[in-house]
Length: 391
Ligand code: PHB
Image (cartoon, rainbow, N blue to C red):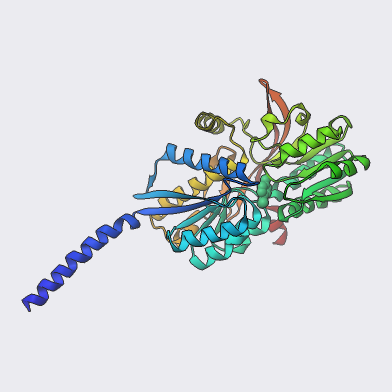
């Protein structure tokens, strides 16, 4: 009898020790951050990594009694790697959340894994509308390409642009860009004389630019993903299009703040619609740009704010759940969350888990000797138009 009591007591002590030992795992929330640090989308990984580090430097690594540990993995810009790394992080590292995803195919690749593991996947970079519909555990802090394209279509129609050639990267967000620009532009009386698709990998824009120039449009609408704007602009100048009186318009990916400082004066006058400019005038953004640039020696771009806000979403959700880190509690907490980002006010749509944000119209100008996307009009609280149209 005594023996049994003793054994029970000892078992209790052992259990206590185990719980205490296991508590370090319980007290840590692991975030598997999968982005491209090498390969074609390396600039996106570089920007997101820098933003995540800045966020943790400014906000600490403990929230709601939990230590937030970020485990960084390099996808090398290969979506199959993203999928394999997500699997490893979920199964071996037992992460509570996965995040990052520099490109649409990478985000689509992890969607079934998030559903199966019931853990939140925070899309910090990719922009095809459909992504958030692929798993109830996905929330997005980046953007949809369509959000910006419908706005620039409206601007073009109202600003004397009647004839356009569209050039888009030949993959999902390019298809979204073309459709979400062309449909409202044509409905407003505009004409798309040619719709050109350029391969995503190692694009050579020169022959397509020649074709575009031959059609003598009022403007070229361009969508390329972050990282390719520099090559595009170089070939645009080489073909003499900057002097041909053809305007350049599009979503703001082409005049990405990461590349804009080195694009040369040919970029001046490019009018784009987008959700973030390093030149955005709010106090919050000024502080962000200053801290980011000080820590990194380069300018933050729109991908960086996707990373910075993704971390804020994780921290705020943990505060709301009181540190509960299961996927269902976290994703429920994320729905409807609102805060002020360096880009302006944002909300996670409680119905779609997609981002609602301001879209600004901007023009590339030189300010204090450097090129910036200078905002001159604001469209407030824009929802993803593709999902809105389905309702
Ligand atoms: C995407 O693949 O969804 C994507 C990537 C970079 C961009 C826009 C869209 O700038």
